[in-house]
Length: 229
Image (cartoon, rainbow, N blue to C red; front, side, top):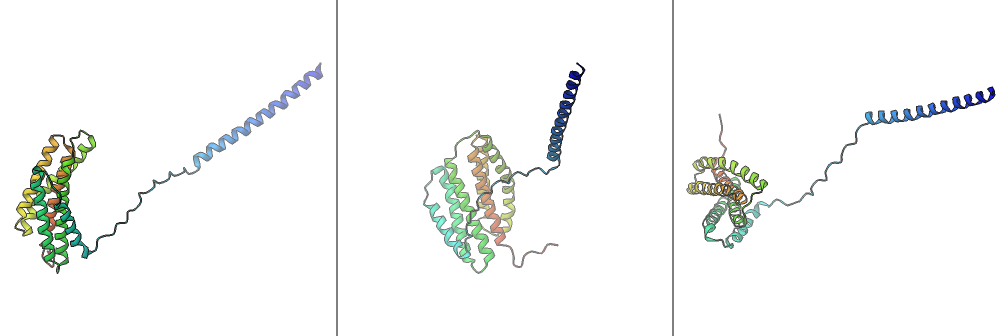
């Protein structure tokens, strides 16, 4: 009987020790894995794929005038309703005058470039006025934010127009100021009517007119430039 008990005791002791050893090995492996995960550097997320670059050649100086004249002719061929036609035509008339001024100032590259920029800005404004014909009333929050952003900046740009007009030396500068102000007021009215797309476009048109006036003022800057004290 005693021999039977001794055999059972040895069997339990042997297998108990094996179980403890196995548990110890497993615990060691788990601990090592946790420690490695905490100390190893975290993998960095992959950067987003960049947008493909659109390589558009910058127009050469000798192409400025021909390109502007082509664009002007394209805009002049567009017919607009009577409600929009008056301001659209004014903008194109100013653009044509500025192109003619740029032609006459070919000996002064700075003046010519500034007058070309002014003409381009007038045509941009005409584009925006044309696009208002397709703008529809919208209660979209994104359209609201865009219109709000543009009109807030436009308000201050219109106030700057008087300053640019005063130093531009252009006889028609007062017409530019009135046109910029009119476009802004129309944009503000469209904003109140919840026509946010139209409001944004009119604000952009007004801002373009003020930018044209700023370029005209820069074209009249003396050479050499002013010295500030």
